[in-house]
Amino acid sequence: MRSRLALALALPLSLATTGCLEFQQTRPEPSKRAFAFTEVDGQRVHIREMAPPAETAPAGNVVFLHGYAGGLVSWVFTQPTLATKFRTLSFDLKGFGLTDKVEGDYSLAAEADLIAHLMDQKGMDRAHIVAHSWGSAVALEFARRHPERVGKLVLTGGFVYEDQLNGFLRWSKLPGVGEVLYALFYKAQLEARYTWSYFDPTRFASVHEFDSLHDFQSNTPGLKAAALAVLRGMDLAALRPAFSRIQAPTLLVWGREDRVSPPPFGERLASELPHARLVVLERCGHNVMIERAGTYEQLIEEFLSK
Image 1 (cartoon, helix red, strand yellow):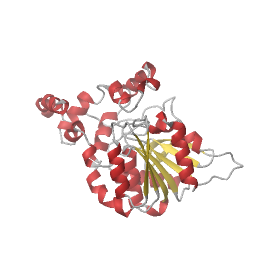
Image 2 (cartoon, one colour; image 1 turned 60 degrees about the horizontal axis):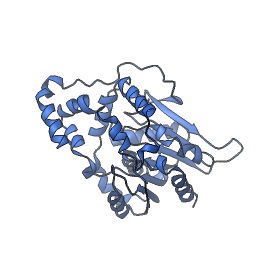
Image 3 (cartoon, helix red, strand yellow; image 1 turned 180 degrees about the vertical axis):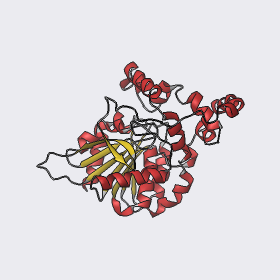
Image 4 (spheres, helix red, strand yellow; image 1 turned 90 degrees about the vertical axis):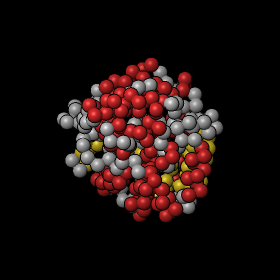
């Protein structure tokens, strides 16, 4: 019903507003919330590096990949914990966070290339990949393109199948219609979408958090255009045939009450990846790494240390 209403509103306006979404035209001043930036292929990428003390040899490298409309802040608990043993790198993927949002390629392949080029820049020949939601699709694309550079995979609440796209996202892939829908509704019901990701949102959602989200969306040049470009580059149907060829040992972690990517999708993915094991956490929603941080980190440490 909501998608039909959105389409009914969008179509009369589509011709007038097609192209109303603009990419970033000039590079904004670095945010006070930023950790660090690096240049990759002419694009400024927001990154966070953490590692064990200098006198301690890392047990390996870990790269973190956030979900759609997320950012490296998704790993606020997980990265510092794993950084006591591993050299870690998190960053805002193309289209999100504080990374540049210029016009260009936002396909899964382009996101995978960004990972490879960042790893090259940081001297990481090989790394374990820990991913959340849509970041799991990016991780699988990277594993498909660069199998020799992947140690193990940890996929969390993976958003990797075409039939996970809701009506709003499906309609938004259409030329003209997507521009209107994102212009009108991308910021709408921000609180509802945020709380939808938790089993118990009262523990994590606050007025301050919502104010920060609204401020970021209102003052980030190119945000809507880049987010729409990422959606249109999200060819999940083309990625699926590669699942059976991915040989990396894989841990799948799902929340029992995940409403964004319900557990049956985890069961399906576990059956299609050759070396995957599924763990489902009770009383937990989509943002497993926040809602069940301690248990999640323990699972990852044990899996990567085997």
